[in-house]
Length: 75
Image (cartoon, rainbow, N blue to C red; front, side, top):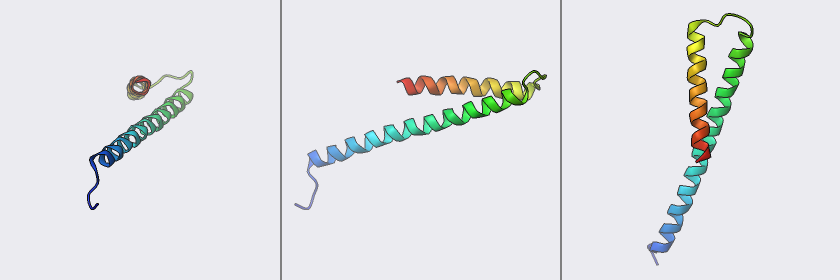
């Protein structure tokens, strides 16, 4: 009666894995939202204006990361 039975340990392990997956998805969603906001802000700031090279590179990286996050979330 002092030690957990193997079945109980498995249940706890499964619950922890589910929580980890939900947390990972939440983190990815939050990151995707932050990236999208950043992209929109940069596009609004330079709407119709010449975009500096550094900003263009940042936009490309952000968009690529956003696409990758969305693919990861679909899995």
